[in-house]
Image (cartoon, rainbow, N blue to C red; front, side, top):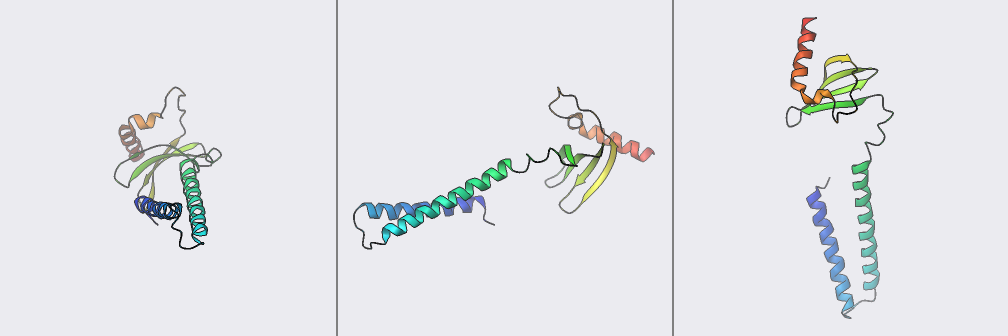
Length: 144
């Protein structure tokens, strides 16, 4: 898969080639009558590639999050604890599950009944003092 920088370089090279061909044909030094066809084909290719890039960006930007309204599992909150490790609170079937997520594994850390989140708060209470809440929850779990 191409990196973003490589994509921009490739796009820039295609744009430069199209500019050079059109500038050359605009000066009247057309050696081949098929140069107009080449320019038209390159511009068409450039337009299609631009549309594909725009569609990919739109799908990445707006695609996945609009369809989670009726999902059986919903992410309530989370926190990053490392470069590739996270702790998430997931809601499913009327309960919250605290989940540890690493690149190779997903572990359930604790479960608790679903709590109501006040509408006047922008984020759930879990994200405010998550480390203290997690410590208390683990202590409760170990005490059982």
